[in-house]
Length: 215
Image (cartoon, rainbow, N blue to C red; front, side, top):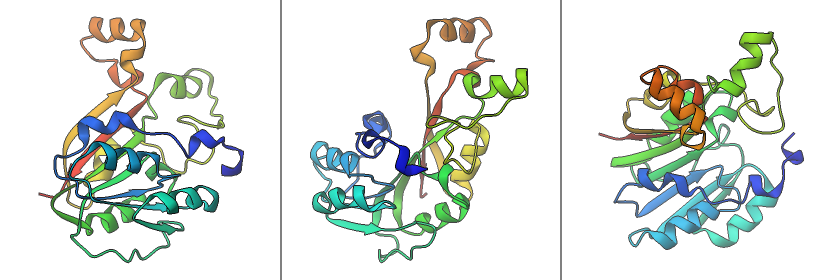
């Protein structure tokens, strides 16, 4: 199913994470790094970023990333024993990754052990309550997987804001920043959110950018 996805699926820069990037990010690891575009952007834009490493499941994308990164590992994160020293990373990125895993809770715990004190994991997680995803189920009793988006046919897990935060805090990390995206793109959605005092906001947020930190 992943073979049907276009090259842009593996090769775009996730600049929207910029507000969540901690000041200290000397060593950064990305799970599902694709061709390494986001890591390369971070290294070029953050003066103190000295080491970037990536894990990628698919060999074709990995060939590009391997040439760009300081360290690269090919394989399924749920099956890998990463040769990275514990408490050695400042930042770990999991951008649209955790919903594809069989046991994302176990992976979060595994990555937690790699963080320095004060280190952070930044994840982006789709919101299953987004109205375009939930409308068919609630109104028409219809649930259809799609090529991409929230109902991507490769998604194994589905989260709301609440359960996404619970996932990210499940190993003892602390959620100190969360940004919902999607609301700002629709004028009607903004008005409905205003008129209902924010009650409908969760239905207009496409995904959540979540940062959890090692206290």
